[in-house]
Length: 380
Image (cartoon, rainbow, N blue to C red; front, side, top):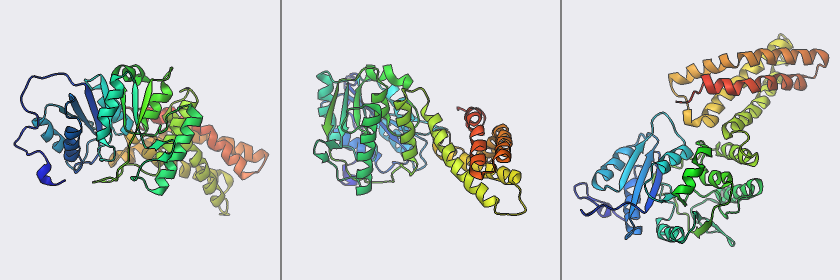
């Protein structure tokens, strides 16, 4: 494919004619995907000939011109719409907003990076017309993985994550980790209020949140290598996924965000104990001062990790990051006082440093979640 194949800026893509409502809405989240957006529009146009469709780009305030390119295409093609989100990020949240804005009875979700095979959409729509509520583009079959777009490590991780999802949530899909699927609008609207806006695996959330199983079909496809840009997945996605699995395994008794906060807190406990043990090696520090120092180190660790993972959709940057850190210290101060007091009391009765330090750290954890969600990372 060359630049000559792309739509010209002065030529409308859609010829004039009588408007008809779309049968298929395609929702595509974007974050710095400027190089892929025109190619995706072109490939969708070819794959969906004869189908009434609309395309909704949901952009998380990209800084590479993605939204400008999408809007330029939308001005020439009335089937294309753009939503720009400012001050909030996250794949699941973007997808939910785009899907709620969809007009068609069938809503398809796919990535902007050209790794999903758009040629599967007509077959997925045929299953929908035949009565399926959910059609999943799967990278897995009974014979194993059917993709060349994943590294061996990601292929192994995908298999492991899918198996964990099936065991913990009872989901029977071959590829519950898929980001390429089509769902009936009524089915999505019914479950949307229960879905987490955080994380990357919306399909798993949808299926695991259903009170009764959806009538589902699967379409195998080959996962293609990325053409332009970089993957948005980072090393903390595993924590995010673990939080979602635990939330669904508990029947949504606790939120994904709370579980992630607690996972971060568990890592902070390890940091606290390491800092405490190191401080106790300094003869000029008594236990009380060593415990106070360890609590401060752990709070700092928890703040930055929560900002990166738990509250990634409300992530603080620049001057707001420093203000947030000060706020986090402030709202955790009550827990820190209890932390030091309880730890000192335990250590006075039984001078075992790790037991006393752990007891003190756990005392502050329960208060911190509610306070930090309200004051440090408030809902925008």
